[in-house]
Length: 232
Image 1 (cartoon, rainbow, N blue to C red):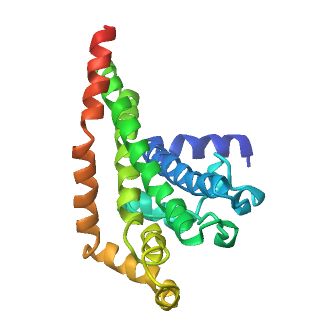
Image 2 (spheres, one colour):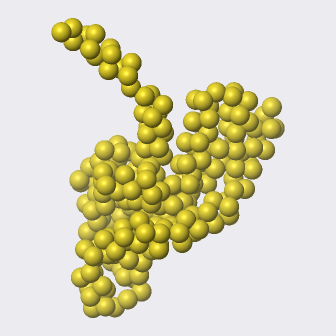
Image 3 (cartoon, rainbow, N blue to C red):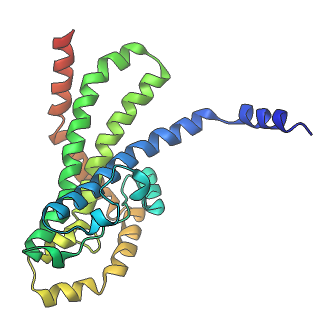
């Protein structure tokens, strides 16, 4: 049996269209979750907690931040999560306040990222459209999907259910005893969220919230479009 010929036959039999679709779906998710978690770790570091830095999480390497199931959820349902950046709130000068700021850093960074990619979308819209190639179409779609997923990640994480970022913000508004009671149910919170997103009970409101942000910040795409027109 000729191994080289067999390998060539396998390669020729691959559907590279499907492979390309998967790659262009995963890349936006990796960008969004990596910068989301990096923002958590960086803000925590600036507020006095070195935990994320010491564990090598202050990095743009997506492998360090990937939760495989959360990544699949992002690609399939457009809502998901990454491996949480470790934070030790005992290192903060003002634990409640600084934990809330650290938690908010993720969603806020995603809104900023979404705005940046909308701007890029407007900037490359005309040249990609004029190119009239499948690759240009894929690039344009990837830029838009990155913006959408970034806004989606912000909306999803602001839900005040443990272990999402919104619960950490809620913590800053509650008494310590009340928060500890809430955290007892943290393990069940993610299960409940998965069911609610999968059934559409939460997925539909999240999609509406995401589209609200997309439409609210669409003027960044218009700025990009206008800048391209001026450059031409």
